[in-house]
Image (cartoon, rainbow, N blue to C red; front, side, top):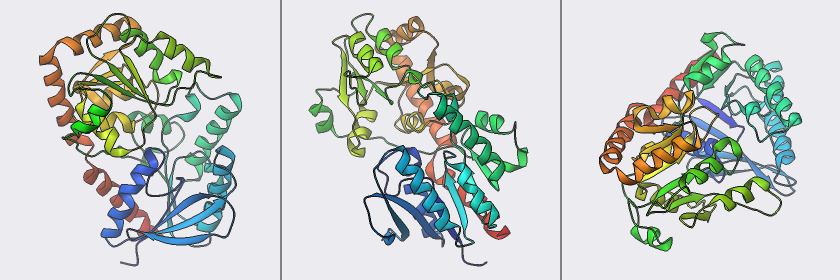
Length: 370
């Protein structure tokens, strides 16, 4: 077989310092290197200067400097990355469709491009009309311009199939590590005791039901805290201010934490995990909760139901959320049963090795067609 080469676009780089796609690439890239692939990852750099290269764990990184670090600079980075990738005939894996219109260049030059289509971004309540229109256009562009699409959830595949043949879409979920231990000293730093707190990890946005969860938790004394990770800025953000105002003294806002060891310990030590996401596919945070053996309290929707299955209890309203929190705080047998179900669900679908093997099998098909 000829040299196996893959170029990964659509992320800010590796190792991960941002979202779920970066974490995924941090696992996928070294995995493919170990299996004989040449892996090239495009990395966004803030500043000026020439494009340069570096090596990370056998992965070739191409650093592209751009001004700023906001949405506009990321669009510029995606454009430059696409132009650079189009100079070769190497197979591309694009993570996300936010700038899928740029794939026109790859299509025109005959460069094979597999796109992971992420969630239904244009349905998210946080975006205004202009942003929603941009995402909607790019979702259709990704569907039309990609050689193949990856859906991370069966319902995302159903959604994409409205504009593409079923044979053009492969469903591969997100993965997570199996976490079984925590650092007691980390919990002590936050004044927490293992098994005696709930945890919520989400961006503080309406579609993630943070306000409803806080209101439900704060209806009565729980005898344990709800720990919320995220950056809440009440000045200038009405939603953040409303969440903070609704919280009882038992709700602990610990800020945005990016140290993986700290977050992992907080996950494993928790009695239960709350997942209020209302839209999306296979959400990384929910999969990571299963990998940590967390009993889950999840918003009741088709996305969360497939991921968590019987390892969760569900809510559709503040009152239902309140009732389920009461059960999780007081019913030890329920918590134990959900813990066992979470671990079983994780092993059945979301182990990294199984996920990464599925990706390699798909990429090999397109490598051979190139």
